[in-house]
Image (cartoon, rainbow, N blue to C red):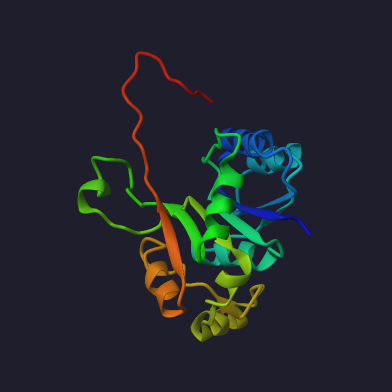
Length: 209
């Protein structure tokens, strides 16, 4: 069993996929990590990028909430990271540092604050909610927070769609993650917000594709 399961949602984003996967492997070379993608019906180029990167994938058009739940269901690792394909890891110790934080405290989720497009957007509103592009979970604990969504179960049953699990985590608000803090609190759990930092304006980019 791997220590870390990484679930990546993709959709027509071949330029990002290769670099996101490469960055994961470069910054966590000693971590037993399993990477799986859930693709929302991309063109062949994105699927080829996943294949070239050696990442197994499922290709089925799902709402984002269902795709995230499908990936969570696949995880049997102690820690699960659900992320977007345009997230690139830069620090070589990102996982050991976050793992130590989670191990030292009763946390279930570590995620940046959802600030939308940056400081000029939701930052002024102070959402205080998790950002869906990067969510690191304690797998066993977060799975206890799932509930049966009978409406979705019946809808999929009628349409003949594949049902991965009857129990779902509530990724179904308008912003995907904004119900999670209340849900975790109801189960006696907490989450840790990471403070996003905006890059200063420079004459040339400090990171490029």
